[in-house]
Structures are given as C-alpha cells and as structure tokens.
Length: 241
Picture 1 (cartoon, one colour):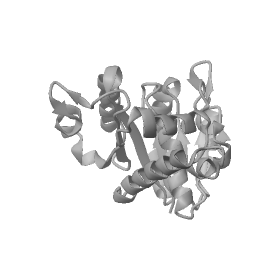
Picture 2 (cartoon, one colour; picture 1 turned 30 degrees about the vertical axis):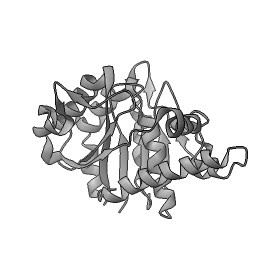
Picture 3 (cartoon, helix red, strand yellow; picture 1 turned 120 degrees about the vertical axis):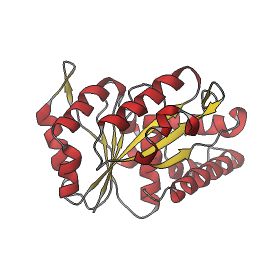
Picture 4 (cartoon, one colour; picture 1 turned 180 degrees about the horizontal axis):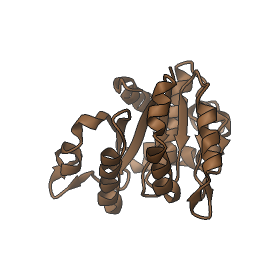
C-alpha cells in the first residue's frame, strides 16, 4: 500500500514546494523511491529539484482542470508501490479540490489499497488567516478517507491570532479529529541557519547535494546537517508519514 501525499493550500508562497521537497528527501532517506509529481501550472518549483526526478503534469487549461490530464495522474498513482508526493499550486487549488471531491478520488485510491494524506501549511504573518481558512475549507470538504497533516511554518512570524495558538483556534478545534499530525517547522536564526537553508532552497538543492559541495564552508554544511536532522526527526514523530 502506498501513501499518496498531496500538498494543498489555496494561498501561494507559503512553503508548499519546500514541504514537498523535504518530504521526498525524507522518504528517499528511508530507502524509498517516491514518485514525485508537480502539478503547479504557474511555478514549477518542485520540478526544479533535479535530484528528485520530479515529473511535471499540467492539469490546467484556461483556468479549468483538464480532466484527461488529471485522469493520467490517477493512472500514474495506481500501480505505485512507493509513496507518491504531489505538489499543487495555489492557482489550481479550487478546481483540483473540486475534481478530487466530485470524482470521489479518495475513495478510489482507498479501493486500490492506497491512502490519501493531505498536507497543508499554516504560516505566520499576513497570510495567517488565509492559510487557517484554507485548512478549515479542506477539512470540511474532504471525505473521511483523507488523513490530514498540518505544517506550521513560522518563517513570516508567530502562528498566533489574538493570543491564540493554532491548536486553540476554532478552525483547529472544530476539525481536530481530522488531523493526524501537526509538524512545527523550527524557527531558524535568520543570519546563520536560516540563510544557509534559504540559499539551498533557492538553488533547488537537496540536503545530500548541498552536504557534498566542497564549495560550501564546513560550518554551512554543519548547519544544514542540523536542519536536516531536525526536520527528519519531526517527520519520524508523525506516525502518519
């Protein structure tokens, strides 16, 4: 049985592709060869990671889901023995969700012996309420066959509103039973760990690639090693992965 990890969030620029790439590296580190697919019609960031062999699938045509292309995605998933990781863009969030729900895709995947795990990002700063609303929308619309993993990304600020943490917000308490895991991404010191991680991401490098680069200083590689250990440790604790 494979797990189909789908990264969904209606807000752009919140770290969806970073999440997808990190998850793919985690699976590879565990000895898997995940099937990685980028369906973002605007920014194919995930596809930029050459080491992950990401397949690009254009599922949109003139703001509409091209059903035939999405049907092809289901055909790709069906025979997979390893986990599947799908990064989806903000612009195709609504039509893709509509396709998945109306065609009862989660139930089809379950019949095949697969499990759909929806990963969504909550971010601090200006996008906080938009991302919280996006999560609530997903949790209320997607059927019971779906598992949810919520990633809390503090890059743009603390994840709190009117003194409440995410776990205290109504969006979470109302949908608590749908959430299998919450992953709190560590806050990285901007001048050191944060800068090194950011530069690695901008270059679309995996941790393994960056750690093998002698052009990077010893301490840069050491900090990246620490970040990888932290992130992979968090995923180890999320049993659903």
